[in-house]
Amino acid sequence: MNNPDFDWMPVALVPLLALLVLPLIGSGSTWLTLTVAGLAMGLIIFVIASGLTLVFGLMDVLNFGHGLFIALGAFVATTVLGSMSDWTMSDQLWRNMVAVFPAMLVAMAVAGAVGLAFERFIVKPVYGQHLKQILITMGGMIIGEELIKVIWGPQQIPLPLPEAMRGSILIGDAAIEKYRIIAVVVGLVVFGALVWTLNKTKIGLLIRAGVQDREMVESLGYRIRRLFIGVFVMGSALAGLGGVMWGLYQQTVTPQMGAQVNVLIFIVIIIGGLGSTAGALIGALLVGLMANYTGYLAPKVALFSNIALMAAILLWRPQGVYPVTNR
Amino acid sequence: MSAAGPLPTVAQRSPPDAVNPMSQALLTLSGVHTHIGPYHILHGVDLSVPKAQVTLLLGRNGAGKTTTLRTIMGLWRASAGTLTFAGRDITALSTPEIAERNIAYVPENMGIFADLTVRENMLLAARSAASEKQMDTQRLDWIFGLFPAVQKFWNYPAGKLSGGQKQMLAVARSIVEPRELLIVDEPSKGLAPSIINNMSNAFAELKATGVTILLVEQNFNFAQKIGDTVAVMDNGVVVHSGSMQELNQDAALQKSLLGLAL
Image (cartoon, each protein chain N blue to C red):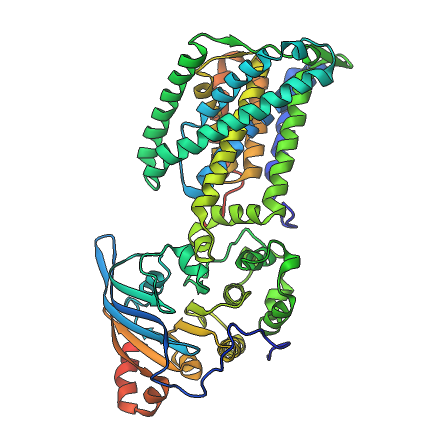
């Protein structure tokens, strides 16, 4: 990102898409509401997808079970927030934050710990075998979903927003939901932390190098498997955090919610260029915006719109917006 | 170009003035076989790399030179035979464990991280440095003296360098910290003659500090200039090994082996 030759064209796609739909929507306030909603959704999806893209980039591992950690994070949040109802019912934002913050931390810790076991027992035996990876990680997710049903029950559970995070603020005629602003802030903080780690630390340097040529990283004397386990656990924890954010966004959680988001996050990392964090951000923002715009303009094609977006981007750049060199 | 300053030594020992056939071997391969998928590439390689000398591995394309280097590094596993480094069996070790024994490797494709800057490529190879500030500046100055392009393009993406510049970066990266053994697959490939001189100087200076060097090389003039010992491979086995001096003095041997080597 600190490279003077940085390719800004994919970044320009996000404002370009937003500006292109403005005349179609007509109303500026509706457009602003939809755009903020799209950005919030996009940043939540980015938090979820950022670990997945690095997992694929580093070790060529296709983890179709990533959705499990989303559901797990969200269900853990129902338990933690449920036990802190005094704090979530308060109309003071700081008291709400005191409840949400530990819920996020516990969700990340549980998702990270389960991620460690998932890597050890499910992913490790199938390194380098894509078909087996797809089958066994999907199987792992199904087992995980059933275990969630055993612990929390099969029905959907409400995950209401804490009191002070509900409602909207008015900017002109546009109503912007408070929680969406919070989601944007959390998403940007996670993105900033990831960019800082990847660009300013030796671990980040190793991850970026490993995505390009893991054999050479090993030849330089680094144990890439340990690095990969770290990235897998971090990616699972971030999916858990994304699950809390997604659950609060939807205000209900179901054991199948991970599988529903799975399709979106794979579209995002394919658009981004498998292995690219900056690409995953662009992909997530485009998917979030597209889902909200088409949901308003043409609800019947909303489901299809993100597939069409991916097809269009791949026609432009067949390896995604930021292809990872050497792969 | 000569060194910018004194170079820290790998170990406290004096380099030999001439080839001593009795020199202690730092690296030994005994009866090494390597299979790549269904293909049997190495058929019992015996190779001895003496300490603090430059050993050249010669042979025509497909003779098994690169496979030998990759097998030493554990990138392909030996299916039979033993590899010994500094008296210890390294046959079953993983690539990082082998590299951690102070072995630097420059592969045939140079292994440059194209999306990283030259600085980041160098920092990555400096295992003991967490940041640029912790890198050995005296050693970096010496490297800059040998390969000015590394300094000139310090903050450029490595992928933007020319082929020759990438080759210089690959060798510079491998010597960013002192190493016991340096393994380079075709160091002179694609380099201009003036840069080949710098490369020769770099290897000579490294040898003088006690570094052992193993090179695969196709350029026999370059090999003649820097080599102490030579091993010639054909069909996955070493068919000749001896001193470069002996090869230089024996016209008949040179003729028969050169036909094989070039």
